[in-house]
Length: 312
Image 1 (cartoon, rainbow, N blue to C red):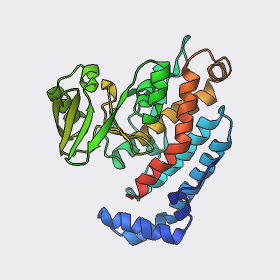
Image 2: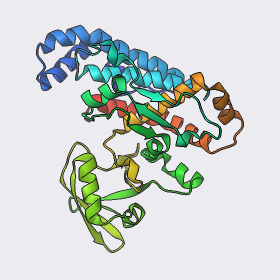
Image 3: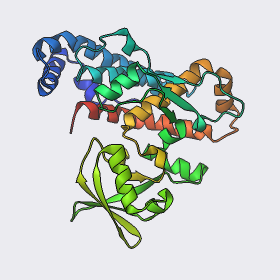
């Protein structure tokens, strides 16, 4: 059952939204914050309300059409988020396209986990990545579905059971010292030395860390935090690090949800034969992964969206 979240409740008030947007614009040094907040308040409320309508229907809908409803719900929420940093959005029609493309025809032996999507030069995804998250997308960059799923902690046990691999290892924070502890298996699976891991994290996230081996564990200290940290957060707040090199990227989890839902929604709409096969033939591991991800979207995506608006 769908439950309202803090942002869907508060953003039903245009008066509240005006003050909320004005504060956001003032914090970013945007000129005429009061006028722009007044100008954008109704559009913002409509984005949030329409997003909630799509998303709530997705919760109640059968699996066959869930991805489409979730995708449009998340898209509207993210458009609202963009208005908090870019009061002119959408300034041109170029940013209205999705900004990513999926493989047109599914080949024989197709597996969802092996599928890829490609980033386009213009459109919503690269625009959102750059303007809201300060992540510059490269035109032609490809994201594999398997790697996107691996970056979501709630998918970890599904990978362990069905693919016999654990893409994420749990991390413990040392309460007495500013350090994090993770199993030495991290370096073994990455086939890296501590120094090489330090270089990788700096290159991918901008964060500077120090790694020291301590018996069968690794001590990780954050010397300087860049645009992100190499950690993945579960819904319950547990931390993980990845044993899979391709997902050491500076990509917020909410963008992984967006890309996965985009591809699944395209499959729903345009690949009826394969979609029917995966839903009703039970012939591969794809359905358990898709079902688990859609459950995660229902439970976690609104929380991730809420964090875009509120720090607490």
